[in-house]
Image (cartoon, rainbow, N blue to C red; front, side):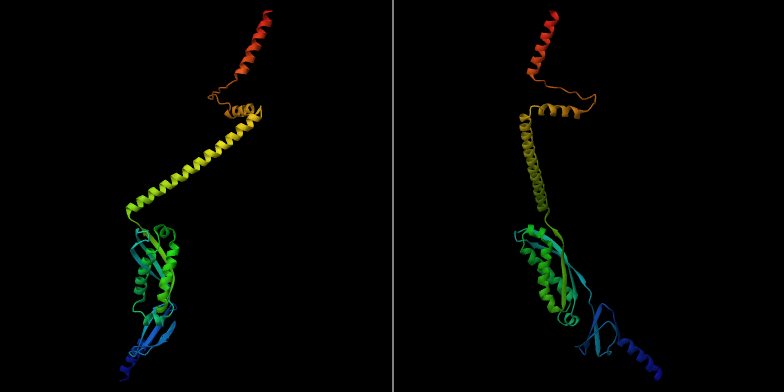
Length: 253
């Protein structure tokens, strides 16, 4: 009789042992009612009378499936994201909500559509962090009643119809071209101002033009392929011609 009792006791002992990991918490129910919380380490429960549900207390990741939404300025978009949360009160998370993973996912989807519907398309593209913060605040109001703590919401992708993408591409191209034209016009304006200033200085200095001409010739270098054409003023040519004529007359005398 005693030999039959020993295996039975072993089975009872094994079934009563609960090993809780460091990142877990156990919630014990006794005859269907909450009894106590099991902490990490070695724990015992009463078989048959008590049951334990182990809850992961680490930060959990839950995808927000891609949602179809309409922005405030009536632009259709498809947007998805991810929600990070953790259980901070295991008893509440087990008792107050049937499946907190599913509940958070559904609540995040609804919050995402509400937030996107209250923003313009331009704000949606530029303020992803703001969108995540607003969704996080909405979810946290309800999640706190479920024993959960939302740590972050991240927006992953924002998709728009192909026709709208083409329009955005044309708009961006036009914007870049406009900036390029403005930059070129400002450069031309600055260059003309500098040229006018240089002309004024050369007009006030008689030798400035000759000095500039010599600098230009020096910059050409000794390359044989360079051809230099000098424009000599008419007055200089007349003086040379007159001097040549006088020298010829003196030789004849």
